[in-house]
Structure formats: structure tokens, C-alpha cells
Image (cartoon, helix red, strand yellow):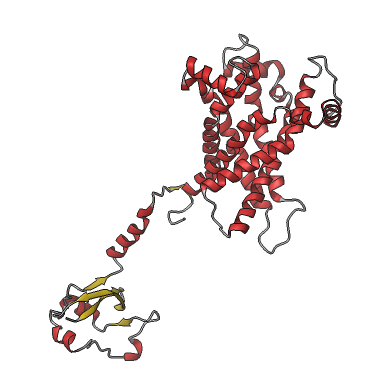
Length: 392
């Protein structure tokens, strides 16, 4: 009993056929049927009026009078023709069955960044809301003296809802802030970064400047909301709500009143934002160089973002401690510091290096995962929100 290979013909619209061999078939009576049965028994028997033109650039061959062959020729079971019409579309769809891909078309690149940033801010803030709640209770000592004790007390008294209390208000505040921050960083970094082989446009890393601009932009936009929220929290009974507080503050002190205390906030935001985004950009470049991969997955982005948050928090935390000391110095009867340098030197002299990092653990407990989740969501949303339908 003879064995024959199964042959697959790939047909193209111009009449070009490519033959590939696929497995073996046991077939003692393998006889093509139809109008050209005798041709199949005698040999391949397809001739071209112009043999020199019968081959295409891919090694296939062209059948003369292709339409007539397709109309009258019938093929045996071991012979299959694949066209490039609907059947190729089906094959293409099968290749995509490995995973679900969601793509939304947003033509405006600025809008894509703003939407991605807002989603990243909302998701990251919600994800770390329980940590923020526990940290707040630890700071005021209202529900226990350890994270486990506070968590157990909240679960007993309020349940899971207690861990997310006040999160909706924070999301409303954080989402626009993060949208502007990530939008500003991406835009400035893209414009200041030089292409491979070109001279740098500025003498310092573009991501460092872009991070500082992102922090400033976000603070300038959302600072009035932060100030009103603080006034509502401290001065209870004075204002009837958010809108009433805005109106009364504007009437009492004018637009400048909404930005009272802005300078100390910028002093704290600029170093952190610049360091955070510079560390993130540097770690991403290092990952691509080490692993020789251009695309970075979600888990890798989460880890890189968290590492960047840890680095920036540790590097700039002494400035945060100095700022806090300057804010409460006169109130608590402590030394009134002349400036940040004076505050840092005094703390270092009185408490040592550990005094500059007092409270770093609770701060990182919220900032580090928030930074990682924020970067991961932002990059994922940018991949979902595409410019064109065929963009990958």
C-alpha cells in the first residue's frame, strides 16, 4: 500500500498557487476526479503558455486559464485549496483566540493621555484606600497602635465599607490631578527627549525636567480644591458645602486666597515628582537594555513603578520632614526655622540621621504601591486607547 503526502495549495487572486506538503496519507487508490482526472494520473500536466512567466517571486507558479480550472476541476480528499478571501480572514481570527484584546479608538493624543491619567489616578487611589485609612487611624491613634489592630477594629465596627470611607471624595480630587500630572510628564518628556543618535536638547535628563513640570502643573490645578477641602475639615460649621466654601473664600480674600501656602507645597512636590519620574524612566530604559525587550508588560511596569516610588520617597523624605517641622514649629513652641537648610541641619544635629527618616515606613506603605499601580494603569490604558483601528 503506497503512501502519499497531503498537499495544500494556497491560491491567490492573480492565479498564483503555492504548494506545501502536509503529512502523509495511506492511499492505494489516490485518483483525482473530475474533468482532469487523466491529467492527475499521468503526472502534474499543468503547462503554461509562457513558462518563463509561470513562477512568481515566492516560488509558486501561475496556472493559465485559472478561472476555468477552478470552475471544472474537482479535488480529492487529500487536496485542499486555501484562498485569500474569507478563509484567510478566519485563519487570522483563530490566531487571535489566544487572548482577549480590547481596543478603543481615540484620535486625539492629548485626550488619550488625559483619560489614561484620570483612570490611573482613580484606580491607584481606590487600591490603596484601605492603607490610607489604616495610616490615618495610626496617626491619630483612634483605633489601635498597630496596623493589624486597626484593621481588626475597623472590620468589627464598620466592615469592608469602613476601609473605603471617604474614597469617593478622594477619587474626585486625585483623578484630575493625576490626569494633568501624567499628561504633562508625557508631553514634556516627549518634546524634550532627543532621538537616538541626536544631541541632547537639554544638558539634564528630560524625564527629570518633565517630572518637575508634571508636579507643578498638577499642584497648580488642584491646589484650590485641596485648600477648600482642608478648610471644610478644620472649620466645621462655617461652610455649607464645597461650592459655598469656594464662594466665601473668593469673597473674603480674592483668587489669591485659594493659593495661600502654595510655595511650601511646591517645595515638597517638585523634588518628589522629578525624582519619581526620572527613576521610572531610568528603570524602564535599564529593563529594555538588560532583557532586550521593547514592550514592557503590566507586571513589570507595576514593579518598576513601585521601585521608582520607593526611590523617590526615600530620596525626598528628609525634605518632607523638614517641611512638616517648619509648619508646626511656631505652633508647638519649637524652634522657628529660617529655611529648609536650617531645618535639615537642626534636625540632623538634634536627632541624627534617623530623625530625617522618621515616619518613612507608613509613608511608603501608601506611596510605593500607589505609584506602581498608577504607572501600570496608565501604560495599560494607553495601549487600550489607540489612535487608529489597525494600531497595535
